[in-house]
Length: 303
Image 1 (cartoon, one colour):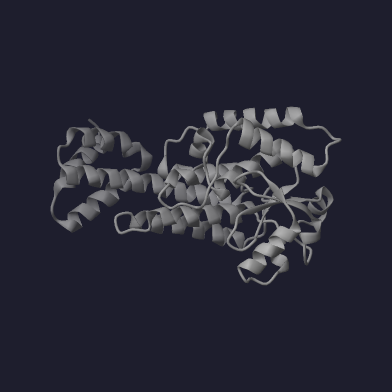
Image 2 (cartoon, helix red, strand yellow):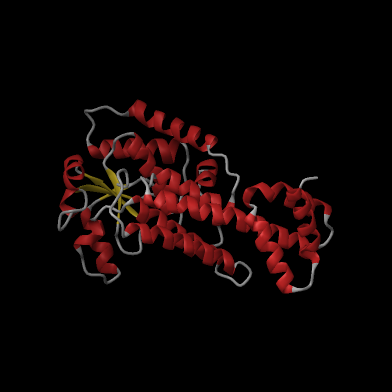
């Protein structure tokens, strides 16, 4: 047994100590080993019959994963900020060992089925209806209100697997497919809703989000929970109903950072209770990492 193994073994035996200062010191030292100490922690968890020790081990493992995730979010937010990868990072909070290959494969199957129905002669509305038919009729994708008692609805791999999400995660899936299919779809900033807009290809290419109002360049709006298209008059009626005056920035495309920040903030509300208050705080911290990066110049790919 080398020095490292001896120290870890000694630290593990101290996890049942009643002295809070000793426990804090032990936990900090175990955390310093990073992911390499997880197998020993898991082994000790299996051997222990002490529930408090097991809970302490679970929290140490969680904190190790979270420290890594913070760095991954920092790198993502300061880099190209790929939307699907950002959604996977959110899912990784709950599932640190997430395997993404099946999700990628299923998204590719959906993309291919949509692509086979597309051609250059179709109107935007016809193309929207093809996506709606494949995604929501053939694959039976379902969506609903933001429910904070259903955390899996905020995790992209679970949404793709179960074909059930909410407006944000269904919208992310739609946006990922649209990007792969070169469809001019972006999320917009309508108050209290997550809505997609089908833009003019040219205006997105020329100057995304730089014009005073983009509303005139949105051909249709799309409900990400159903894939159904609707028009400007429906948005106007909605704003009137909730007593919110029209504003140009409602129609500006959201960046991938904005979307993932929103996902993190809404996901955090699934843990708005005393037992999981630490999770809410951690998710808010991840959202603040993304928010800080949003103040930096946009990276290439953060559309």
